[in-house]
Image 1 (cartoon, rainbow, N blue to C red):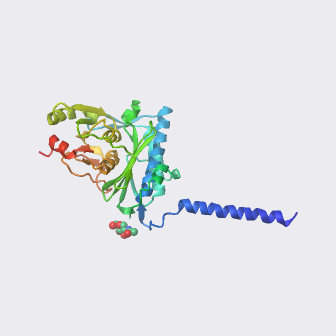
Image 2 (cartoon, helix red, strand yellow):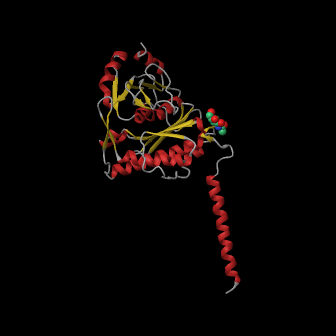
Image 3 (cartoon, rainbow, N blue to C red):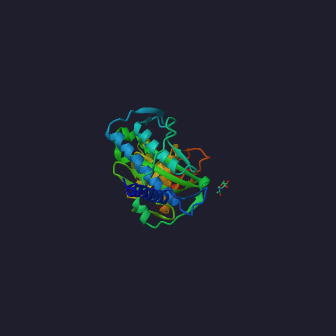
Amino acid sequence: MTSKGIRVLPMRVALLVVVTCLVVYYFVSKPKSEPKGYVDLHRLLVAGIGAAEMGGNEVRRVREGNTLGEKSKGETLEGVNDPLTMGDTASHRVMYHSLKAAFPMVNVVSEETDVKDSELLIRLPPLANEEVGKMGLGSEVVNASDVTMWIDPLDATKEYTEKLLQYVTTMVCVAVDGKPVIGIIHKPFERKTYWSWVGHGTNIDDKSNDDITKIIVSLSHKGDVEDVAKRAFGDVSVIGAGGAGYKSLALFDGTASVYVHTTRIKKWDICAGNAIVRNAGGHMTTLTGSEIDYSSHGSPINDKGLVAAVRKHQHYLTKLNFGH
Ligand SMILES: *[C@@H]1O[C@H](CO)[C@@H](O)[C@H](O)[C@H]1NC(C)=O
């Protein structure tokens, strides 16, 4: 046996180890601009898109396999059944744990909780979204303790069980100091992701329109809002739709010009929509025009209602006249 064969093998192994280390370092190391305790919002955007799409894959898988295992979480204030399915749980698992593993110092608030699998380590897809990488969005480094990520693993669960799949979304929102700055809304059954990063960029086409008043409201309380709307605006069309994510996006494609909600709503339902509306120069406020606080120390419930519009928000607010 010659000594040559023995020497070549360790050389190759050593080389492989070095290359592997470099590759791992390249992908794992944080940008130099991100000191300990700080986080670059650009990384949260890319990760959030990855998490929303991974969650969406679970939502689709459970629906297509018909393994919903539907349970009830009780009734909403409108007396409508509030279901929980395997789609919600499976999506929560991948979304929550992937973000928590990637950003342990960031506070992540999810609609669902899941005690069993608190040790899960889910990896985000590498380079979740090439489009975002190429857009030159810049970076913005913030103190991680000022950040709250709101995730909704499955918005419009009731419609999901009824196969009204166009209303179903998964959402991620990043709030800094309680203000919504990144909104990500993924439609799993259309395999489309919509996002905005306030002041940096968006992939949403704004086709909102000044000329018409079309009000979009929850399917479950269309009747109540219809009366209020007719009094405020005269003869207008009131569109009932499922899902807060769906309704927020509907303000951009000409489906609706204002989104109104008069009963309580959870912040993981509206934070992402609030960010995308805000980025477009619009507003999402309570019925009396107050901003909604998305910091983690407040309540996750907004019980002051909702008026959202890309254009003429103040006009809608005044007409609806809830402050008086
Ligand atoms: C981030 O903010 C917290 C709370 O205001 C503060 O205690 C902490 O020192 C800050 N962290 C860094 C790294 O500046």
